[in-house]
Image (cartoon, rainbow, N blue to C red):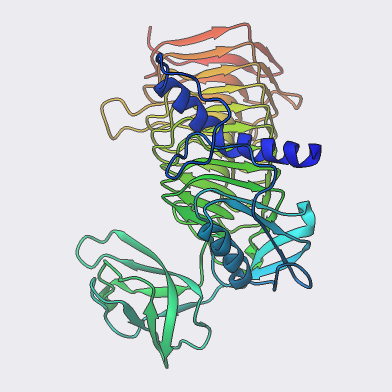
Amino acid sequence: MKTHQANRRHFLAGIGTAAGGMAACALADDRPIVVNPRATDGDDLHEPDWEKRLTITVGEKSGDLIGNSEKTLQAAVDYVKRFGRGTVKILPGIYRLRNAVFLPSGIRIVGSGEETVITKEASHRVELSDDSDWYDQEITLKNANAFQIGDGIALQAKNPSSGSNIVIKRTIVAKSGNRLKLNEGLRENLWLSGKPTCASLFPLFTSERTSDVLIENLLFDGNKENNENFNGNYGGCIFLQDCNRYSIRGVTTRNYNGDGISFQICHDVVVDNCHSHDNVDLGVHPGSGSQRPLIRNNRLERNNQGIFWCWGVKYGLAEGNRISGNRAYGISIGHCDTDNVMRNNVITDSGKVGILFRNDTRGNDFWANRNLLENNRILNSGDENGIAIDITGQTKDVRINNNEIVETRDPMKRVGIRIGQDSGKIHLAGNQIKGFTQAILDQRRG
């Protein structure tokens, strides 16, 4: 009984903390406190703490559902979705995907640690051989032999009018020769003048417009040696779009030709105690517009960048992370990323800069203002011209307090903190800066 109670509390804490906090604020009035709740139709705020919930197991050789493809995993997920909430337990094995697993709201999907490997089959790219209009639900390829019904694909082209990039993610649902029917209409013109292609690129786990999900104790391997790059605005080992209250815990994301974990316009996402390493692009990508992300106690190693705060990410916390050996930046923050806290992180051996405040000149006030850096340790950043903390553009009202900024190699031309000439007010206090040619380089006029 105690084990069931602990598991239930862990699950509910993982997917319900943010929702519960907001609900408490919303109900801060004189109405009676709910005690001993009953399951009432339509009431998703107050729910009894059930000892057991629906659990479906998936395994290569045993379990409620047996198989090692995305079809088996999706079947388990969809079965749980039918009943509203529950757990999919993925047993040890190697699961090879030809399409993403699409997650619904209210699900807990857990593995057996690094013994549960979710990986991707090799990608293929083929040119389209005929025009398709925006209202079409089919495409024609020069050769469709590499594609199967059920495959996840990315259609990529140039807009024939504007020259902008087009990316459309779809699933193949029917096939006749080189003609493929898709699960949804295109909603973009794929004309041969835009050089359209079809590639078997997709995230491993994904979701759109869902909430209250826990992903735990899984290993994702993107098989980057056999896959093309897929931009982190569309893919990754885990990719979320317009989702709320996701918790990703104890997960390894590695070897994706793109991002490890990416979430776009997603709020109250928790990435906790994960290991994102050896991805071609970003370790953790809190994407555009994401509010209140919590990135805590993770290891982010040998990616191009460790944490990339995208556009308009606000009120987030990155705490207790070990960010090591990333080829460009340990942490990058920029366009309208305001009111975030980065503390107690250890950032070592960044290829260019330990922490970069990016310059964005396209608007009136697009810089990473009102952020706090405190109690971080930043060690050995960049090449002979390396910089531990680089503040560029018109960044202002940033506090950098009580950080240990150290260079153990020869000083060369290395700088501890560089403040760009157009920067506004930058508050420095209590930092220990050692081993640089110049501890602080303030380029501001006057």
